[in-house]
Image 1: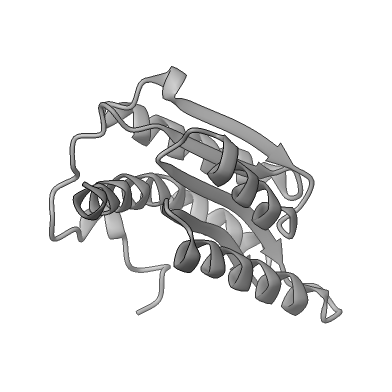
Image 2: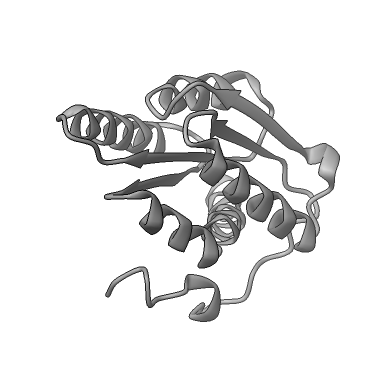
Amino acid sequence: MSSSTFSYAENQTTPIPDAYEMRFGIIVTEWNNHITDALLEQAVSELVANGVAEQNITINRVPGSFELVYAAAQLAKFGHVNGIIAIGCVIKGDTPHFDYICQGVTQGLTELNAKGDIPVIFGLLTVNNNEQAEERVKLQKGKEFAVTAIKMVDYAWKYQK
């Protein structure tokens, strides 16, 4: 199913857990910030709408998507957060650079999830053009990242107690 027609927010099968006591770190890229800033705004708004206090949301910026992995690893170690949302946008160009960045970030965030103690949400848009990125913003993908983060922290807490 194409993400251009599917909205996770509208197709949830379980309710959003209470997020009042949760603390989140959001890492957002400066690269393609016309997209990532909009996704960040959506994510923060959704976290707050679900009970997360604004002082329990830490926002860090990194230059580009490749740096999301290092920043997420450091935030997981030292950030005193329950979950991390990594937000970036990579738009395909004429060189294989797109493939290397997407693969590196995917592998890095996957490894953090597999070996780490807190969930890291994959908020990396990998699109062919700016129009596709803008469409993802219109589809409220930042909101979806936040809802996913809340659900995954709740999931982690069930097994860490």
